[in-house]
Image (cartoon, rainbow, N blue to C red):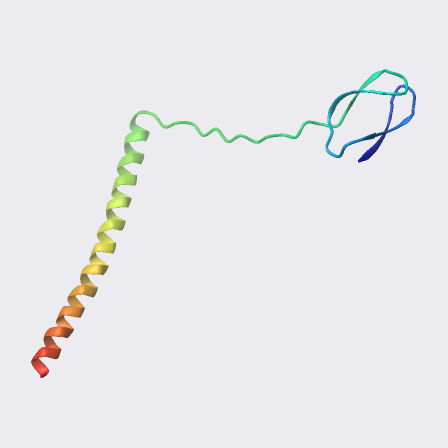
Length: 93
């Protein structure tokens, strides 16, 4: 609870924490405003159009393809090394 003073009659009043808006003083019946409404931040990013959209889509596709190809190359190398080791191990016996 927060204690405030009525701006009309100077009486002490208790309001809930975080309260805001218009209130009526129970002592004098006058209305007063207290606190501020919390600010909500909204990020509204612009939507890309035209050539910019095409370029960003190509870049995203290429980046995804490059990542996929890199992972495939790494897995392929690991499998090749494994089979190469199996072949060399079989020849040694």
